[in-house]
Image (cartoon, rainbow, N blue to C red):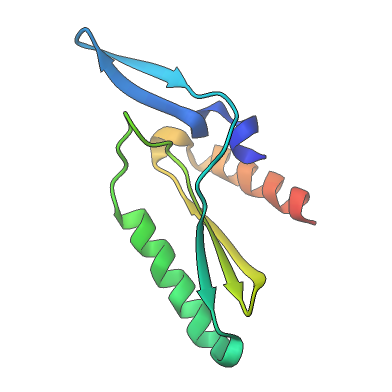
Length: 109
């Protein structure tokens, strides 16, 4: 939903003839990281999710080959319990990110 609605989340930045160009990718499939955890220790599952998300965000983006949006779903005993994402500032500033989070909350309600 978010990636389809917001072009900045599906824009690649490439150098062509010495100039930086933007290429908006059409709607389609998106890779989503899924973290599977055992519910025996929920606090451990939460810490694992946070650590995984931080790791995703610490890895640089290849703007020419990779969409600037990395979603993560955390499953505890097969049930979705966490949702996160990371994106660089080029894909959205703070007001845009707040809007995306609000849209996501509405869609999941």
